[in-house]
Image (cartoon, rainbow, N blue to C red; front, side, top):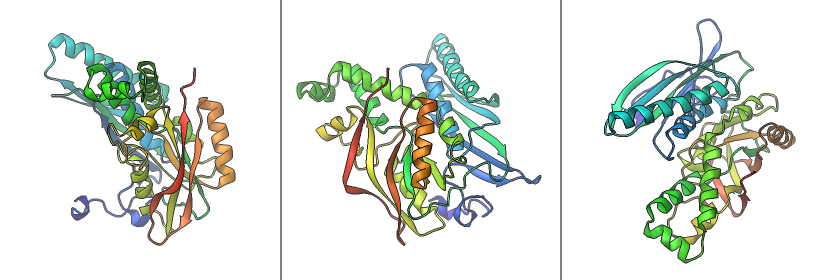
Length: 333
C-alpha cells in the first residue's frame, strides 16, 4: 500500500537506492553528520505498567541499535493515558509507565527531552529515538555478503510466552488443555513468562555497539514480522543478490513445546511468530561472528547464536531449512 504513496526522496543512507529504511531514517545533515532516527510504541502485553514502560523504551531504542550504534542522543516520549480508567488508576498507571520508560532511557545513557500525550482507550507508550554520528560509526543495512553467517542476540518465543501467561491468568480452555495434556506446568509457564519479560526489557545497546568493532555487514531487529519476516525484509534490502538460510531457532524454554502441541498455531517454528523487543539479527563473517558472540555474552551475561548463513540467490529469498534445529534457552539465575 505505502509503495504507491511516493514516500521518501531517495536520499536515505545505507539502503538500496536510498529508499525508506528497514528500521530507521538514516540521513545526512546539512552539516555533514549522519542523523539516525526511529519511532515505535508498545501496547499492554504485561501486567506491570512499569515493565510496559521499560519494554516500550527498549523496543524504540532497538531500531537504533540495529544500525550498529550503541548511543542515543535524545528520546521524545509518545504517551497515551487510558481514558477508561478511574482518575486514580490512570494517574498510578501512567506514572509507572513513564518511570519504566525513563529508567530504561537512563540505562541507555540518554534522556527524554519532550514528547506528546493523549487520552486513549488503552495505555500506550513509545517514542522517537535519535542519534547523531559520523560516517563509520554505524552499519549500513545493505552490505550482506555471500558467506556471511547470521547472528541472533535474543531468543524467540515472546508471543507464545505472553499468550500462555494470559491463558493461565484467565484460566481459559486452552490453559486447561495444556495442563491436561502435560504440555507445561504452572511453574514452567511462570518461568517462561519471566524469561520473556527479562528478554523484552533488556536493551540491545551492547549488541548494537559491538557491530562496527566486529565488522558487521548488515543488521535489523526481530519484532512484529517474526524472524523469517524480518530476514526477508533484510534480504530485499541488500545491494548484492543474496538470500538467507536459517538453520537454528533459539527459543525460550518450553515455547517450542507449546507450539508443537497444536493448542494454537503461533507459527513460531515457521518463523512468523511476532516478537516484542526481540534481538538483533546481524550478518557478518564467521570469524567475526564468533568473536562478537563471545564478547557480547561476556558483557550481557546472555548468549547469542549463529543461526544461519547468507547465500547467493538472485531471488533474494529468506527461508528456514528443512532440517533446522531448535535450542531450548533456559532462564539464567
